Length: 562
Image 1 (cartoon, rainbow, N blue to C red):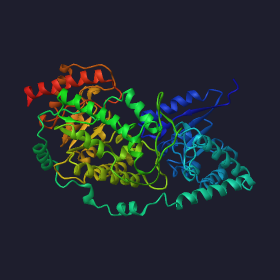
Image 2: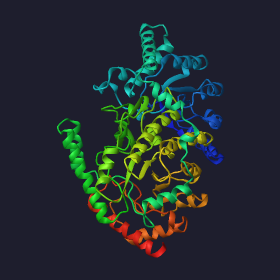
Image 3: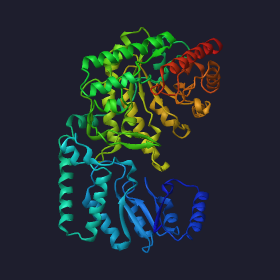
Image 4: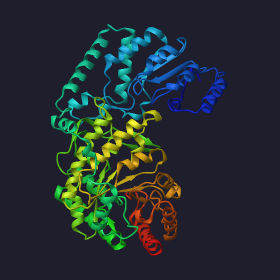
């Protein structure tokens, strides 16, 4: 077919690998070397570190490295990789949406060129799968903000400019591109839209007490139980109810200007009333408003925060055929006004039962957005935490007794190398606590985490100090609770009793069996009964049928165990 080179993606070389895996690498590539094709081993998302010797010694013709996520590895690779091999250096970020600062990148490439000459290739840090396709389609973006961005097509252009700059640095088009890059970077760094003095002042004023509840959990839970007066094995849901076609049509009409704000509010109030009535009829103990007004658990909040911008066509693959359109954090983040209080207080006005406020946590907001590159992820998480803290305090002031702060992406943020985990976990936990610690002891803070392994981060989950954590456990047959048992997790837990990803309706006996397993690991007085996750993607008939059985399971457990 005329193919000369084949790229073999091996990002696993940036992980902590056992020796037997390293040995297997050498054996596999010893066999592959007899293929006549030239081979480029591509690594990305982190640095090679202790796998550097293995990577440079493989019998292949080229090596690609990610010098964006691991800029410090470039010098080590220059020193170790034989110069008869191809070195592909990824210095244009394939995982974000910002224009490349060309001159410092060019300086690094020139250093590599001195050693490798024509055997140097210029590339993106990783596949451009993680970047939207083409910025030119974005005809609604603010011109200044747009000038700071580069999507996949533009990143290819940047790579071409860097190649040309290596080959002919004085060429007029190269000099023009470098000059434009300087102007763009200066515009962004000096823009008053980026840096807000009041946000900086709040960040600088954060003290240790700001991320601490007033009292330890044992004291708080006594006040909360006295106030909430819930039965043993209290029942609740994770937050969202089915997003029906009528909800989506109303939201679309409102965004298109075909539905007035008042009519849209009336439509959403009707959906909230329905959700509350269903929950009361089914006998749930702690209710939710159903999130009818929310398009996405991140986008809904990002639309209401200063410092975020949205694209029209900035879609990227999440997994399989599922795509997402992440918001872009371009500047300091703040909350101009309350985001959920009106909806939640309306829902609370419809019932005497406890209504739970629902927020997306700071770490998840950050992980599911395109972040800034000019400040650390820690600082961005702190800014989000302060904005959410204000919302939590406002919900409490409005009479809401329980507030859930979802951290679905908490574990997702872990660096690939274990040696870097603790730094991330420290600021991620602190951000959650900062968002949750502005309320009185009697206000109960919940969090929810999606399906994941907890054993290796259980101490950090405990350090978040949420009064109640709800987790996905049904598909693991409650085996995930082993981590909480072994660690002696101190706070309340709601292990999911049925899988919301399936339309199948589990019967009561199944849920009782799962909770009976949970009782063997967690004291009964600290257990809640809830689905695995939100019910947004399900239909109402199966949702009601499953919740009927879940409430029946809780009542059976109370009679048997409480």
